[in-house]
Length: 384
Ligand SMILES: NC(=O)NCCC(=O)O
Image 1 (tube, rainbow, N blue to C red):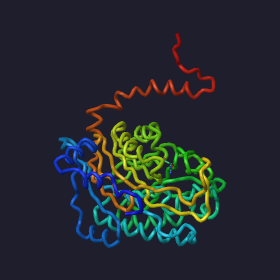
Image 2 (cartoon, rainbow, N blue to C red; image 1 turned 90 degrees about the vertical axis):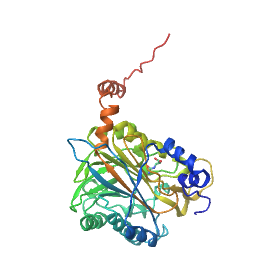
Image 3 (cartoon, rainbow, N blue to C red; image 1 turned 90 degrees about the horizontal axis):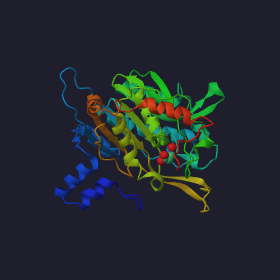
Image 4 (cartoon, helix red, strand yellow; image 1 turned 180 degrees about the vertical axis):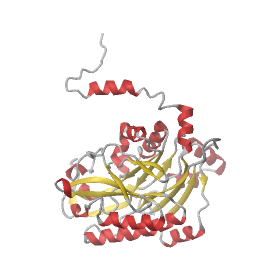
């Protein structure tokens, strides 16, 4: 176990609660039981050899008369960086690519159709430092950068869709940097890209020093395995961001993140799960793991001493379903692959049951928000 870090909430409960009680606690905390997937022995052996956690769970939907089940397997990958942050940029990227290639191979063995990697997966989360070099050197073209080409090869080889969140350099628009997820089809083609809409200005997340708020709206990508969208990290705090992906038809919304325990851990199990409930879709929260060390000290502008570390990235990646159930999380300290089998029919079944879309009264909010964003907005407060 990493110094001072608990491996997971699930491990703590299993260690300390009697089995008869545990069963009720799981139901109260995680809703309807998810089925444990029977993953191939070869995949389990490979995950042990390559030293990452492998877990698999399935969500059920009711059998319908007129629609076949729409079963898809997603793979969520969380990982530490591998080399010291002052190693040459190209070596850091190459080491991470090798690690991801190993984990994606196991995802393919488990029949995964769509893989999502963590936010800015090719690099340390160096935005705390506010230094430009060498971090901006990790930025690449979304269309034909070496990371996209690497993912294209994997996508073709294993016939799976890959969501690859990177730091993007847009050479055609003044070398602008963006925080972008590239969606690569199982055919190997780049289906498109979608940029992070909401940029944090909290704690050491000094990301606004590097890139701009995304300008790609709320795109949804039609893949062979269902309609997917990507709400990058800080966007998970914004219910309207999730809502717009859902309004555009997303059945699965991936939420690749980089976030640390002291800041956001109490929010983590709630936000993506609530979005799955509110929007009748599946959501997948992915967070990196480990503690990253930077050579030069930086301050948090809070009067405390300068330091070299951002804090602990607590992993805990999970999948939530529209009926409010969720998988257990991956470890808080280890690399991991979470495989989840989803029947996308569950989205419409829950929509028909709870009807949050039908009862949403969006026209009320459209009108009121249109007024609220005007410079001369007068808040509707009733006084005596
Ligand atoms: N990467 C990122 O946007 N992190 C912000 C902190 C958080 O949302 O928990």
